[in-house]
Length: 168
Image 1 (cartoon, rainbow, N blue to C red):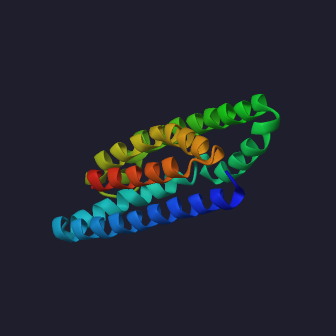
Image 2: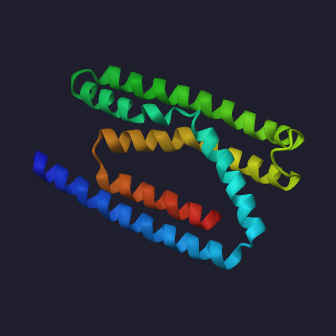
Image 3: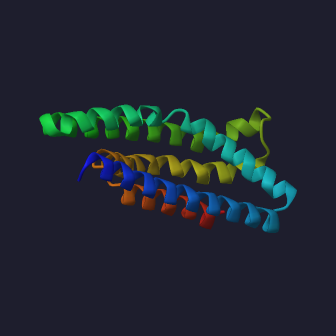
């Protein structure tokens, strides 16, 4: 496929995915307004802020770097590309387990320090399990990005957003 065709295909699927994601955001806002009280919404936001803080410690900041390096070395040295892939995923798994353990076992510490109420603890522990899914998510995202599979990348992003909607 030509570079123009590849760029057009990528632009189309990225745009379509973004529009669907915006629609799901509007839908989740409506669900939140209809079913959650102000107190419940506050609990959800506290738990999500813990998650956002934990995301800082996974290696997602290096995602684009590894996509670029794997893309370059894929044609020249497939072994190096595979080594980068498995090395990055191993580090991602290690950090994910570490962050999960900190949030799962440290949730009660946050309550003892007075930063949250006791009702947040089970939700933080439940949310901490999402960190264990991070290496699997990253594995698919790396493959789809390196192989320029824009449809699969868009579909994965949409499925991820709608799964969040179902959890909410």
